[in-house]
Image 1 (tube, rainbow, N blue to C red):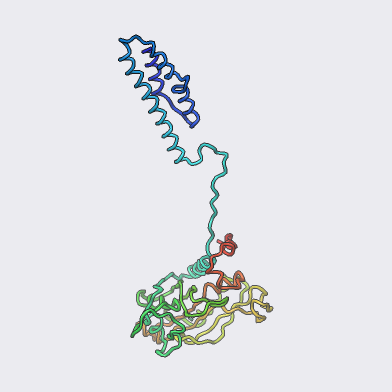
Image 2: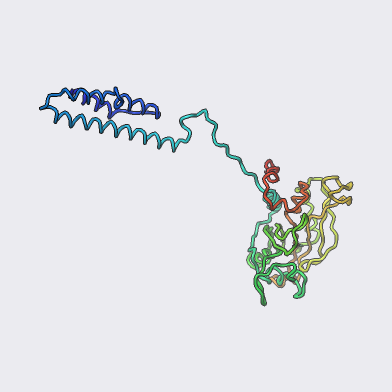
Length: 341
Ligand code: PHE
């Protein structure tokens, strides 16, 4: 009997299992009703009284060793289950993970920035919460300008140089003029805020990319060329542009840029309202007052600036008819841009 016990003990020590079912089989083989250890306990009844004490101890330790071993095997299997997931049934379908897609505003922002980066423009950013000086003062807005009205701008504080939510990313250009040495060639992407009622065509939050180029002898012809190159890369190589005179406090002369309608090719359709043209941005030569307000000698340097709404460019590119779609984040809308890199 002693031999049998010792043989079983060494067998128990070497037990291994790959599946839970095997562990159960081992338990039945050793400790089940007809299991080999159970049988030894039956035989133990016939052991001579003087051997009972010693054999009883070894037999008990065999049973304890077997119970512990089985526990240990179960634990090991549980652990490897956790780390390998469905390692036990490789035919089961995996958990499906849906890939997200870039938001159309991000797609468009990246495209605009990459076009300008080819022409040497660097990205410069600034804070969304700004002061009056960087949004208006340094940009030649007179004190009574309507943009400073509560109806147009979200003010955070009152006073001489109130804190407000920037209404355009031109403020990032002012910060760049403070920071960067000349020449300056930058594009400023970012979120802007205007106190407007939300509708299909307007929102109180939207996104802009504005550009600024300051060097010696920068002319209006350079501005026109920059805008044309951008329009052709964005809307196709046959795109035409036209400039209409306009007004901004920080540029003189100023213009509004239209691109030929990429839907009807200029013939006139309902997107361009029959005109053949779509408005894409504002631009102009930086007003000498702005250069001087930012410590740049306007007799030596000149520059141009432009600014566009990312939502608007994306609307024209994909014929999105309602601005609110960009902010609702309905995945049925967002998924349509999945293939657009
Ligand atoms: N800052 C103007 C806006 O927000 C856009 C613009 C930028 C116009 C630069 C001209 C030159 O509407």
